[in-house]
Image (cartoon, rainbow, N blue to C red):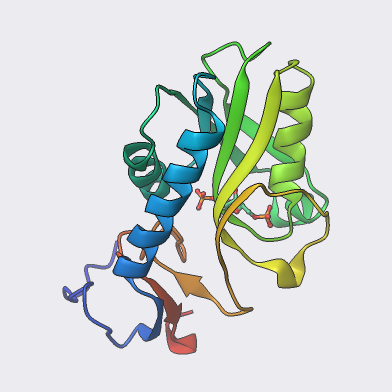
Length: 188
Ligand code: PRP
């Protein structure tokens, strides 16, 4: 593994050409989503389900912005291959530990792009007979959407650019940036 010099990830650097959404903007938007969810689900004790790994930071911040009782669980998926992914085939590598029959489920994603992953997982969860199932995504990339899926809670629309940060990666790097930045094409 190549060891590269440290960069200050809190400042724009050669790999990031522009900050699109600041950490402050992200925090404020998540607070608003937390208030909405707390109001909509008061008394319902929803199960908040996140899809690893990109959702890590959003889940942590969203859960702390929610002021009602919730339960938390995670799923993880992996692609068989890029071609399989293009066809909407994903492999479940970690399933829920919680039965969801009769539960109010909020399904949380960091980003919805084509919608294929979300479509696969929602179809899977629907067969388990939840009382309700709604989607909350922090980022939405509508440009490449192949399947139209209702998204009840949405943070930001993103343009058709390669962006990283706040959980979004390029080859597993940049997830820990606290903002959303445009990746310099030279870093691709
Ligand atoms: C991202 C994201 C969604 C999916 C969205 O996961 O978390 O699960 O891509 O893309 P789609 O709408 O085109 O299906 P990714 O596979 O990058 O894994 P990660 O969360 O581990 O980064």
